[in-house]
Length: 201
Image (cartoon, rainbow, N blue to C red; front, side, top):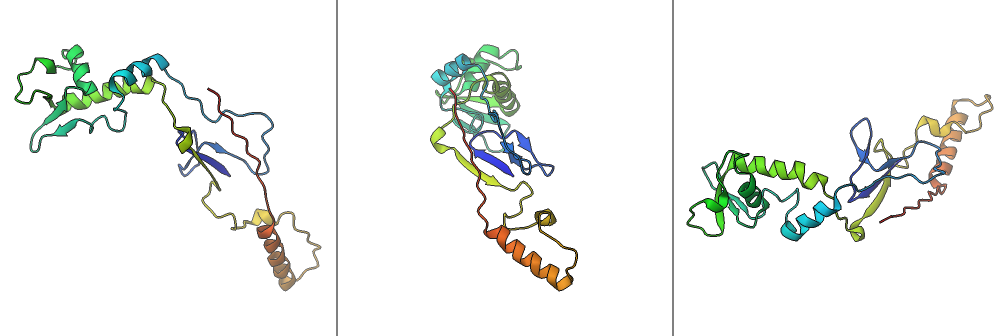
């Protein structure tokens, strides 16, 4: 059985690649607290980023205040975009000119080659965003529990009948009848899971 906390990065995977935050083996009890997720990073670096570029994150870095020019290899980028700030300081490293030095007909926008823009966005991801602490909205966290093989809880495998009492004197009809009654008991039997999740700041 697997537990998924939506909004937090998964850290366990099944053989089929399905992601979970924690996977419970069969007939398993957790006696000591287990850390299923820990946010790591440079809080100071994140604070600096939030002060200057709070609107940008890894998902909207290429789209917010950036527009591709049709039929060209140019991206129009707003002066407030973090890529502009980066290229003003490291333009030689990226083999381009400082955006602030460009002569432009659009005062608040600069033309940046697509390849340079993509490289700068990747640099920001690798050197800033991936090393910064991430803020999580705890009010948006939801928890779901399911079987890791994607089957339903009402689907009974052969292992479910391992505890069924068999005398050895049953014929086929008796055995099928016994299995049906035992399956009905299992499906209707309440199974509980006690789950305590704590957050430490």
